[in-house]
Image (cartoon, rainbow, N blue to C red; front, side, top):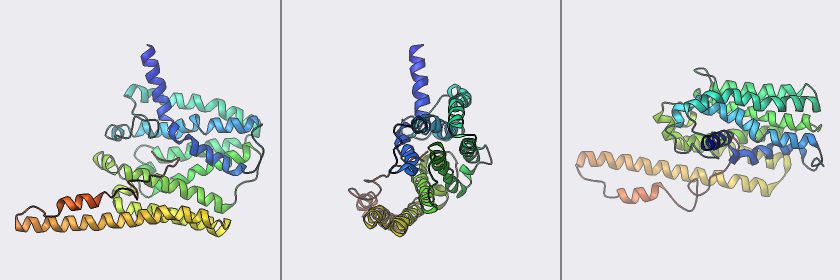
Length: 302
C-alpha cells in the first residue's frame, strides 16, 4: 500500500511538471518588479498556485488526452516533461485536478474579489480549447501554437491578486511569443513520437528544420521588442544570439540532408555504398554549438 501511495504521489507531481515551476513563477513575478510583496499573503498564495495547482490543470489535462502518444515518448515519466500514468491513474486525475483548484479559486477570490474568477475561467478555457477531444487545437496546427497565448492569464492573475497595474502591451506580447517559441521547441523534440502516434503538430507538418527556423523567428521578434521598448541592447543581443545560431545549424542540417538524399539516389543508380556516409553522419549532429548543445527551457513544454 505504501509503495502504491508513493507511486501515485509521484505521478501527480510529475503531471504538474515541477521542472517548469520556476519559469511559471517568473511569469507571475514579472508584473511585480521593484515592489515589496514578499510580506503579502496574496503574493505567496499566487506563487503556490502557479506551481503545483496550475501545472496540474494545464499539463495533467494534457497527459489524459495524450495517453496513446505518451506511451511512445521517451521524455515522459519525468518531473520535467510530464507523467506517463496508468489508465487507472489517468481516470482519477480529472477529479483530483478539480479538487486541487477549488481552495485556490475560493481563497484568491476572497482576497482580490470575484474578478479573479476571470483568470481561472480563462486558464481553464485555454486548456479546454487545447485538449478537447477531436476538435482541440493541439492537433490543428498552427492553432496549438497560438493557444499558448493563454498563459497571459498568469500576468492578469498576478496583477489583480497583488493589486498592481497591468503590464504594458509590449511585455504582454513578449510573454505570448515566449510561450509560443517554447511550445515549438517541445514539438521539435517530439517529432518522432508524434509522427509514430499519428499526431499532427506544426513541427510534424512543416518538418524539423522549418520548425527550428520558426522558433528562431519568434525569438528574434522577442529580442526586437526588448531593444525597441526597453532599450536594453545587451539583453537584446543575448536574446538574439541563440536563434541566429539555431538558424545556422538548421540550414546546415538541411543542406546535409539534401546531400544525403542526393548521394543515396546516386548509390541506387550505381549500386555502390555512399563513400562519404560516415562523414555525413558526423556533420549531421554538430557538437559544442546549436540546439544539440544548448536547449532553452520554458514553462510550456509538453
